[in-house]
Image (cartoon, rainbow, N blue to C red):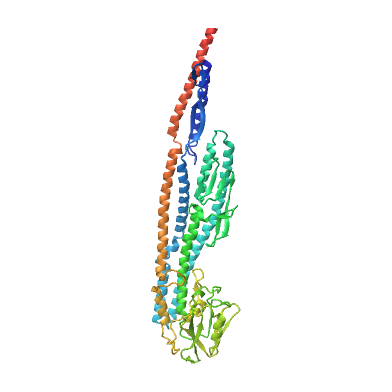
Length: 571
């Protein structure tokens, strides 16, 4: 029996030493990111039966397990994705703050005010050349503002898209790491042995990839490891990783994020995570702002040109050139390159001709009919050439050119078809959006091409002091207009709406980011309280196992004395 006592005490020494090793491991990793506290599970060894009695055989270490809460881990995966999403959105919005600051007192809003004020001053004195120069200068200020805003938003979109490529690379590295750790875990876990440290490293890698894309761990019947995207796309299974990449170009103009092996798009599953935040910033924030700025430019260009094209300056024209090209199809056909061709409708515009003395050759001029879906630019050129004193041709590039005969001038009026504005004939602006808007070539060349008056439709007479066109353009300032399918609104209302939208987006991102960070802190505190290493608690446990170790050693010492005494009796 004395030898039994030695064996029992020996098991106590070995087991308590192992328990102390676990505590030492915990304390050594108190600051290791992602480390989960480990605990020793002690069990009694199988007893032996001696006579009618069962005698214990000591203690053994059943297993060393991690202290984790799967619910907290799952919640952290979800929240990590949310934090990263709103971090990217907020950072990107703040980066373009200067764009939307410029909508206010020093930017686009003021430029619009100055633009219409310049037209008002020109309407008051249409014969003043200085006021014409002022109109052109104020117009260029609007163009500069729109162009700068477009460039900054485009740069932000492209930067976000480039960052997505970098994040994809990082995600693939993490997926490979997860696959490698899974293989190591499978090899290490034999019998009841659990590869706790490797599992901690894999969990940490999963939490890191959850910051990039939303993921979910799926429990399996055989206990194998399976990581999926939230749409079910397989990312990692046991020791195999499935990489992310770029696929076909989507409607946004940028390539989708896909699973490389299957080409399965992940776009619908990227509502959170860093990539999701970059996509939302690129498409739903910057993309929408870009659309609204383009809408401001389109409505400014077309509605101004619509009035200006039917107007006239102080002198008649000797030539006019369309600044938009046409093809052989109907002028309103969808294949036409003119951005506003869809605005053309059945109607007409008038051509008035004048002799060298400036007198109208025919009262009322000649109406050039346009039938939507049928009339081509060749038809219009033919009709114009039929007017005495006027020749119209279409050059090799598709531009309509109108020229007066020697000693003759002409003026245009009353375009109810919109063909003049759509093809930028006698127009003030060129372009169709914030990237392409500019002053028309004619106005760039000479401010005398700025139209201020209108021809009297009945008599073809033009009063040099007439300011009907300038007054009509001024009236656009407060008109509810829409040329691009958006809700009708004045240009000032559109800039105010855009500014408000941006402010709201920033406020939401700040609120969401603050909330998600607070949730992340709370979850991490919960994880630390459950899985983190508390040095004080470990020291208490260490004392407990130390005392048990010392007691086992005391038993050995006592048993040894008993054996010495017994052997002494024999000697």
